[in-house]
Image 1 (cartoon, rainbow, N blue to C red):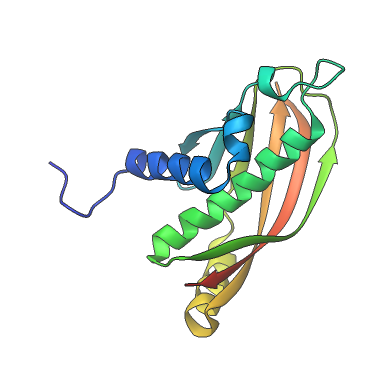
Image 2 (image 1 turned 90 degrees about the horizontal axis):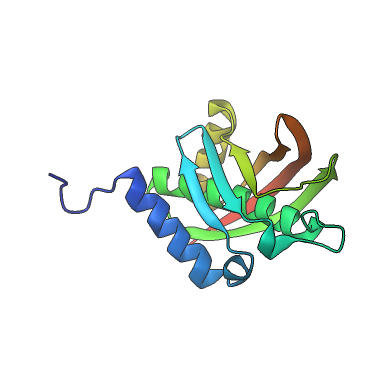
Length: 157
């Protein structure tokens, strides 16, 4: 039996899906779904059909958006862990398109090191703002198709 006020990971995933659909409407247009989070890797999924370009491969803007949102979502999960709320903003990012994506795709965002997270939490609690650099990628089979590095800024509410 679940205690009032406690959340399972499935509850958090549903909450994130609702938040993305409500606060970032483009997620509905390219049919983004929150796939999974195991506290090491966050996965967001999107179908090729809603994100296809003239060449029959995934549109670069959709790939970039999914990766950006994966980093935003990982940052959201970090705030949940710290029991904090704040505004998450992408400060800068870099995408490298290495291979075409020809089927439904997923963005995988990797949890930062404990050292990086410790600095991030300290900045948030001390200065009410912090920065977090995240890495994410999209694979086509076993091939790295798109790599992403993004810096996110959080200002606490």
